[in-house]
Length: 384
Image: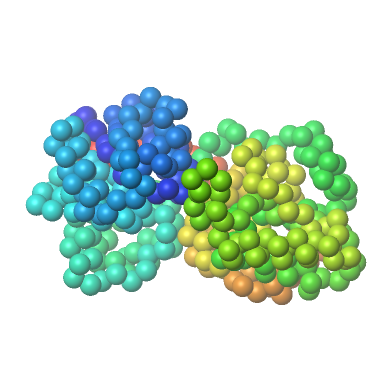
């Protein structure tokens, strides 16, 4: 077996699902014995997290650099360290890795696509994708879109399901009862909830508006829990966070809705929780109301906790839920459709456990780290 040496490139300053998963992937590859380095910004949370490990981090001091600047640094590192593979994790990094290979076919270049594959068939992108040796996605839908919209050979597209630490997703009846009691939930009430940014694109407003389509009697039987904070725009010099204005406006709107007599004690907003598994455990049904989610990690986590998922019939969410097999599909940006799904579980509470069991079984079959690592290492070797 040929020796593999990988340079991961991730310039993102954010800390969301993409960045969290990328760091976890790099850590898992390190545990599997892959020699790696990571090129990232000194100001990023990615750098902070990786510094806690034995993985070598190569930092650029600027918050952001251009594609060309990053490409030059990549080329210099390749010449010094003799990397066999470049692994890019954002569109900007993919461009930089391609530019770094301007007059060369090495190192081999893998691009993890976490976002939608929008049409890109101009001459520039034809050259760009000629410098990508493998494009990987956890979503069959994304790969179909890439096959249709990108100037890339079909054989370069690879389904690489997200790995999850499945051993961490275990329910505790005692913990569940304690948390539900602390939040004022009764045993016979159905608890719906979501974990996401308080952001218009996440469908949070429509989720709250769905309650307006339910009768007072129906609202009295349920609780709606929103766990998350507004979208972070930047940080001030003193380290304090600056939030997107639209997200702050949405948060204030939710807080006003909580004061409505019929929703008091039934609409709950909880700040972001680093240890979020207990909150998923406390739910009966998980909801992802995003307008067009590529392939949600939170959906997988909820399914691993044996929760059915109400999700929008768009993007990779359709693939995750199936034809109402592992939950309930609803129309995007449609509060009435969401209300119908809520009403379904109110009228058929036994379906929560049945669909939850099917959801967990599917997630365990498709999304384990051993399978993901095996496929990733196999791809690295095949490209050599």
